[in-house]
Image 1: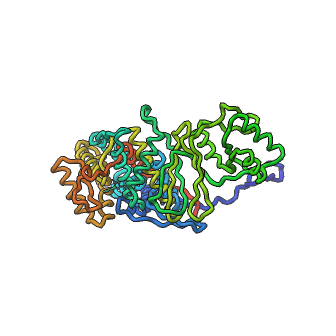
Image 2: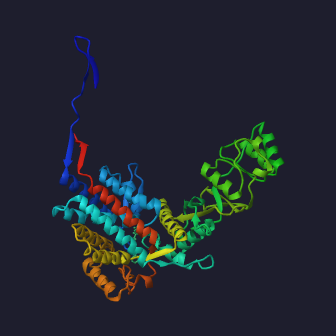
Image 3: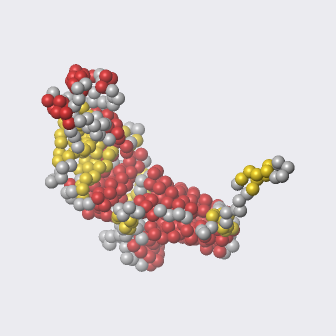
Length: 491
Ligand code: ADP
């Protein structure tokens, strides 16, 4: 755009030729959007459940990630279609709010889109589909509450919590050590939990990893720890050391470095010090020990000192790496889960899996209602929604039925991924649910010999499952309501 003047001095604006844009309208727009959303869901579908496949992703700088965590796969996929991005955000919202169920939510949304497409092709207006989905999702939401059960546990009975975390971990690569990791996750959450207020601050749990050792060596440290320690000195440093000693400090921890001479001086004066500690770590140490971070030595007073029982250093195998453990702190609520494993990839995946387990334990402390897994809750909701559809006289009933069918996609994917015939397995389980009036029948993915998920101890939190329903419905409704897509053309 440029401003010019004609021969009489009057200003006028010269517009550049408009950039070429492509435009999709109406049904074409909806279909294009639906197929983009479905494409994303298709990728995740094979990762769902205990027998789900893993994905290997390579970043532009060559780093490889192997995972079956929905949110991580999508995060690293770098999609550039706007609708596909919505699906990525969908998974991330589930991750953010609940921390588990990130694959399932995308699979459900993909299936809702697929069924919506069929209704659009039959001439039903997208708004009617969206409204029908909304009604159906409310029915399913309430039904989940109806089939949910209270899950009892206490500080002296953590086994139920451990078993729930084991369900979460059973579909991950770290399956082999699920018992140990689940116990670690539960103990970590309980260490920082405020059971009276039913609140857990996961920020107080630090998950760290170091290559080396076995996954089995992963441990929970009631502590803060961080790397490499050494010290140093300068002329005026002498006063500082004296100042620290005067207020009664027995250990100095510093975010920045100091040179080797200072180090020597501190050693000489019998005041151990740790330098180059990360900001986050320093804050956690402050929380754990009840100490205050002071910007200047002059501000140091005895009441700002933190307290810890033991400070010990541990080195690892043949490497130079060392870790400092600060244990039995005044405020022992901050803990660290220290992961060991053969390679970085494994450690990263373990971190993600532990994150899921921590979230599940936290969710149960916040709200101890559960529904059973293995697709059983979805099948039960599907039956309830299908039954409710008949009560609606309008066109919405088609959408409500479509919603019921879409719910079946979760057990179908679980069956398919476990090498079972999806349609046959689903119909057998569904009819069993109806015949026995038992909402706990699901897909026996691990060939245990029973499809009663209650017996198998496969369950998920009620809030997690409800959140999946809400988020998937929300994003599908949003996609259906877009009927005009204007985008720059590719050349
Ligand atoms: P998400 O990222 O959505 O949690 P997962 O890959 O962890 O996806 O799979 C979760 C699904 O697998 C849930 O539907 C859960 O009920 C089911 N599931 C987990 N363990 C089992 C099991 N042992 N048997 C049957 N289903 C299981």
